[in-house]
Length: 190
Image (tube, rainbow, N blue to C red; front, side, top):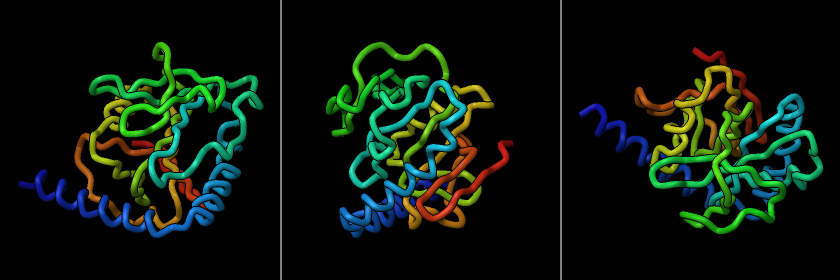
């Protein structure tokens, strides 16, 4: 019963988040995305491999980080859904991403064989304790659960997507950092 109640509550969070995101104007999303990318750059400076994402629907647009070739010392990875798993594949530029499952741009090629140093994680809602609610398929939670404990995980979203507390279940992975266009939260990993 508890799991069913949690699922229903997460569904309510998803509906509210999607409604809020749909009310944002394209100009507001652009401005907020640019702010997120500006604030994200320092967190990527000392890393070798960075897992990013192409935006789905109204998520922050990380393309405002600029062209990936501007960062010659970094390997950029992007998610692709393979069956029930999320894998990350190297891309050298944004134009290498092609329309994939759920209409999300995704890379082609073999999965990157090593864990990334940083994973930038999308979501519909985030809370002050590092929990997130995604679209509900569990791809990111399953992927993040397999990473080494010291992997930096940064949830990114717009300010209104950050709430005090979200429903969560034992399998939900807690993020190490949350970054919105309005604030940054660093969290100790348990």
